[in-house]
Amino acid sequence: MRHRGAMMDLLFSGAASVFLAMTLAKLFHLRWARRLPALRDLPAAPDADPVRCSVVLAARDEEARVSGTIRRLLGQTGVLVEVIVADDRSTDRTREILDGLAAEDPRLRVRRVDTLPDGWLGKCHACHLGAGMATGEWLLFTDADCWLKPDVVERALRLAARERVEHFTLTPGVAPETLPAQAWHLAFLVSLANWFSGVNRDKPKAYLGMDAFNLIRAATYRDCGGYEALRLTVVDDLKLGLLVRRAGKRTRAFIGGDDVTERTSDTLFDDRPIILADGKVTITASQRGFRAFLGTAKLLGLV
Image 1 (cartoon, rainbow, N blue to C red):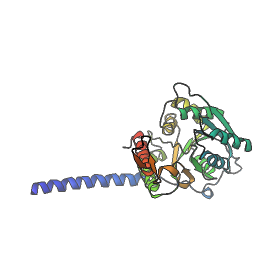
Image 2: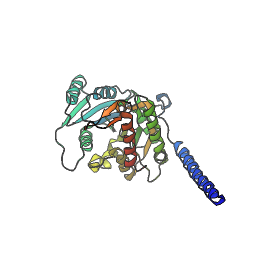
Image 3: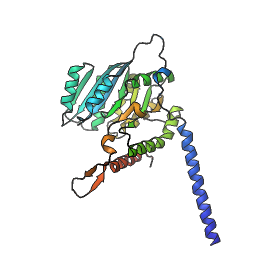
Image 4: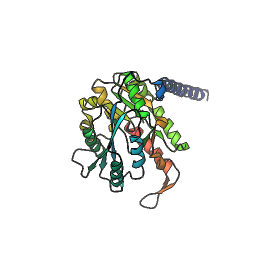
């Protein structure tokens, strides 16, 4: 019995030591996971002209959210913005909504995609076409369900200029801020702590990119191969960061929080029942959100 008790004490002490070491490591890396500074803390260069930024996004069956997304993009302040949407074979009212918005504001251009060429994934192909239409000095790749605060692009560009980097990415916040959504968001940020630490300290093998806000200098995008090099890539946002690193360029990553909110959580993190097609299984949307998080973590190699 004494021998068994000693073994249990040893196992417990070992597990506690490992847990403590992992916690301390995460806390160390979290020092480099920061929020984007306010505009007042990011002074512009004297006599600097507004930067021209092309926002590129793919949209497929986004009639519920795309109008709010586009209006917020067109409402960005302090930058010369153009918005390019590749309508990727939508079957709902997405194209109708986009055409109406384009008639109101010429800064919005819409490219219709009717067929997907061999050797491409839909989103990668749509982003490739959109980027080919861009005229800005910088390209911002975002999602049709992400809503941006009015000054976030200007703040990101000012910080990129201050840090002298060619790529800038923000993690998305979640909306609405329900308890399951906040739990998912916290777990997601903690899982990315060492990624933040690596890119923000310019570690040679570190890279990161988030589909909610992937801002890249246009020349760098073309030099590193862009979406032409990501034709069949599932985690294209992350791998865009890898292309930047391989090209010898630098990235900065910050926590988006409420500056960049992902509206998919409107359905992922409530508790409304979801009846599957066979009518036999019922799950809640928050369970679906948890499964989505696990799937993302597996793709990133985190679990």
